[in-house]
Length: 396
Image 1: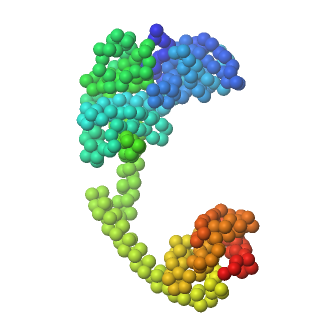
Image 2 (image 1 turned 60 degrees about the vertical axis):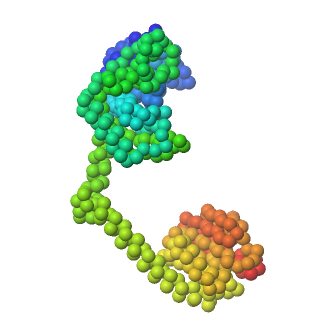
Image 3 (image 1 turned 90 degrees about the horizontal axis):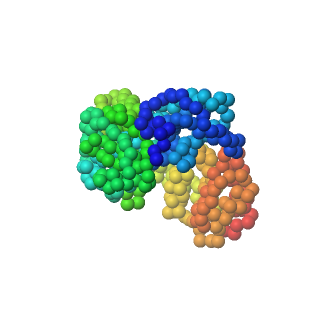
């Protein structure tokens, strides 16, 4: 038997209604409320639950129990008369995306015979997983255009219940998981699916479907998309970003790609020149460090160089005379230990022992290890401690 008090089936756009509380139970300091009529949708079918209030009290959870909706409140209503209000922003967002998903999945089958295997409707991301290893950019453009044309046609969406016998006469895209109270959502001449969720009455109410990106998930393709207000916000955000880029490059949208590519190429060339200059500088520094080394141990603090720079310097030193290096990068608050000698010094073990004496994080292997510290004081203390360990305990 279909529960007559589930108003969201026939009136998904209902925002406010008046009804009676038929039952109140206290469970773990929360109050479980049953209503004579409810339009609050509990989670199900890939769609999250509604938010809203009863007599101004926020609903903290919705539970479906034996086809009845239980409304969980953290306060007890002081009357059996109930004024109920839906969080409409959340409801219309769910309606647009759930109807949008039906339309999108049906269109992808129509165009490419690719079925949808799962649907996720979240606060930040909405996705469908498609039974295909990939979708081309051209396919995505075709899908988006075909969906938009259907939205412009403003096709009607009908919902109704059928029994098992009637179900056998329907060609459903999505089969039901239940055997009783089977609800059908039909986009006329487009899609026929079993679904218990809330939907718009006309496809035009979706407004817009914007495909965002795809990613490979095992043997399927996950398609990210946005509908309605979310799609509008996405387009506005993208337009604003592009406008800002245009201003930065002092160019127009149709020229921005060429401008960005030119800038990237110029940057790469500049990086190559910088690397050549670094090689020259590090060659000079390495000569000085090797000249002042003690027992093939080089300990040096660098103010501006990164760990990546110091690793390049280490390679330059190794090409001339392998050494045991202790380099500190003040810029990155890191200490780098590199052993280029053929001895029993294990860099990772030394760093491990060092971190027992000076607070920091790090590790590594036999030939190279590093540690990171929160302050320059800790970095300086670590360098001095490691220096004492090397000079007093390590046989090099």
